[in-house]
Length: 126
Image (cartoon, rainbow, N blue to C red):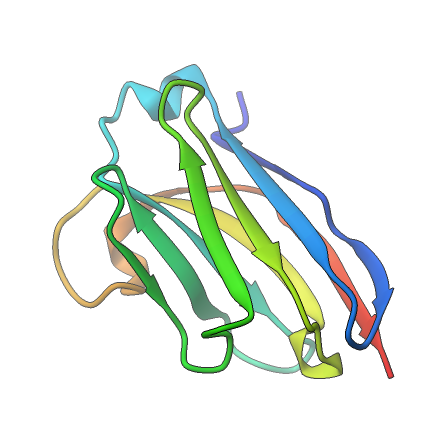
């Protein structure tokens, strides 16, 4: 069973919008994860944290997306969403959803995330 399933990626022109979704499997839900987060990896670059949202609603964003990306969640459905507006070519990459299962490190400390999705591609053309 895939721990997390992302959807909503695609190709858009700069200035456009996309909305990503992430659904947690029953197995992931049983882990009592603390937060769900979005990471992205551009070709030839390291993976980086983009946005995270805790079950209590607390959120954090990478500086590069503040004011453009907004995370939201549906706790009843164990889903998280990310609305991405005013997209830029540098937002291009594979976007991954991850579940935080350990309370250590910074908001995007990857070893704290025990479950990952397979990713959804976002391509922004200039």
